[in-house]
Image 1: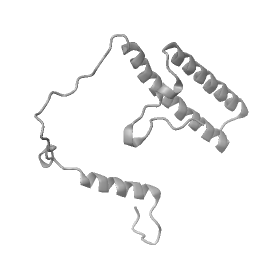
Image 2: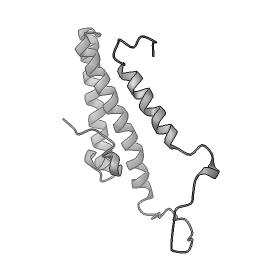
Image 3: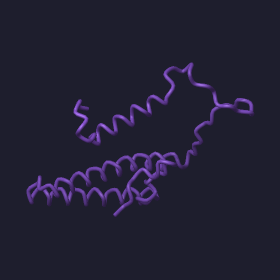
Image 4: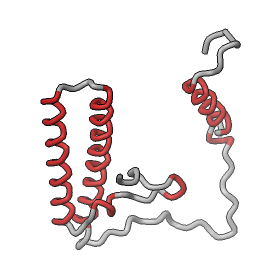
Length: 135
């Protein structure tokens, strides 16, 4: 941030200030944290529940979710580059057909494991869903 107070703060300065405030709310050392108040006796941590029959499907769901996230990010970047005019017509065609082929392959892989593209959109609780709504 510059010393000139006549200019409004930039978006990055606002984000940096918000991050600083958030980190100031965190305890500085483990000793500064207090254990959560519980009335029940301590119990063993939850174990990962696995079912031998669904392990492969669940693993594929995780892998395909990551690939779908990356595919959507690449697609958005490609659209941005097209909007900016950063690509030749030939590059736009190649990029479009590559993204379409990738989308078809994702659909094929999902159907092979009994999934849909909607199944890959993990619910992150208060943060919402992992993937943006499909347009």
